[in-house]
Image 1 (cartoon, rainbow, N blue to C red):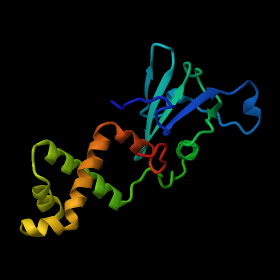
Image 2 (cartoon, helix red, strand yellow; image 1 turned 90 degrees about the vertical axis):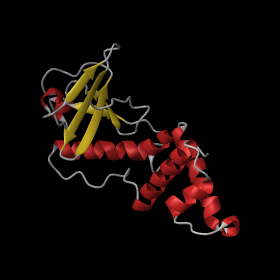
Image 3 (cartoon, rainbow, N blue to C red; image 1 turned 180 degrees about the horizontal axis):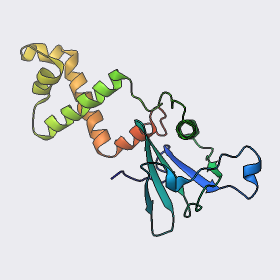
Image 4 (cartoon, rainbow, N blue to C red; image 1 turned 30 degrees about the horizontal axis):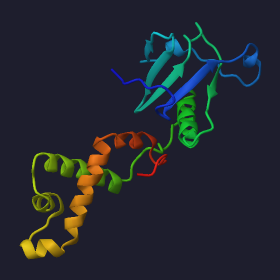
Length: 189
């Protein structure tokens, strides 16, 4: 079962509203949300409607403050002018492309391989340190350090492994939310 978010928490959640009457006459694109193949929908206590739709390899989430219109309808997208606008607009374009059968294109949330590797090292270093492993042993296992105590005192991997543990601690204690908004940083650490 997918995890549902509200638009304020994730830039990938698209807020929709039914368009005003007569919007179909313009350049409207009526869609029937209930007929999207493989749609998972949830209605919460406040009558807000959450939809999770997987098209190909991509997943799209939409949120409406009320139930969707029965049958086909034209919808408008609500895009807050905030620091996440660029990511929100990209999510809308990916959804639109999927609805009209076009390739969705690159996803801005894709981490470069170097960033992925660093996050993996951070979590491994944090887990090791939480299990009581010394910094030196972590550097041996994760960073390939080989040497004696005198070598350890002057090796740059000593500080590198400490930074990995500190960064891992940051992400475990709530900083993981920053990954939802990558590459945009809302707050400086």
